[in-house]
Amino acid sequence: MTGIEEQYIDDAQRRAEELRECPKCHSENVMLHSRVSNFFFVVKCRDCGMSGRAFDTEDEAVEDWNTRADDKLMDDMAKYVELVAHRYSHPPIDNEVAAEARSVLTRIRERRT
Image (cartoon, rainbow, N blue to C red; front, side):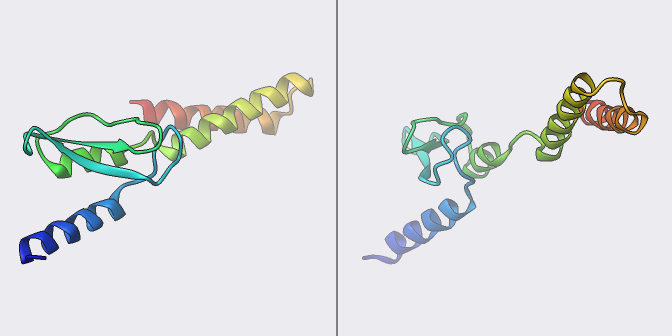
C-alpha cells in the first residue's frame, strides 16, 4: 500500500468517527461519499439509505449531517406537552405546574427566534 492510500484510509476512518448516527434509523453505519470525482460530498446511511445534502467540501457535508434539532429544545417541548397533559388529567390546575409550563414555553419561544 502506498503512502497516499494509507493517508486516504486514515482520513476516511477519522471522518467516520466524526459522523453522528443516522437520524432516521439510528445506525452508526454512515459514510461520507464523494460524487463525480470529488465534485461534491454527501453523507449517507448505508443501512436505510438516508442521505444528507450535497456540499462542495467534506467539512460542510459532515457539519450538515451532524447538525440536529436542538436537543434541549426538544426536551423542553416534551416537558411542556407533559405539563399540559397533566393539567387536563388533574383539574383544577396546580399553580406550580402552570408556572413551570409557562417557563418552559418561554424557553421554547426564545430558542425559536
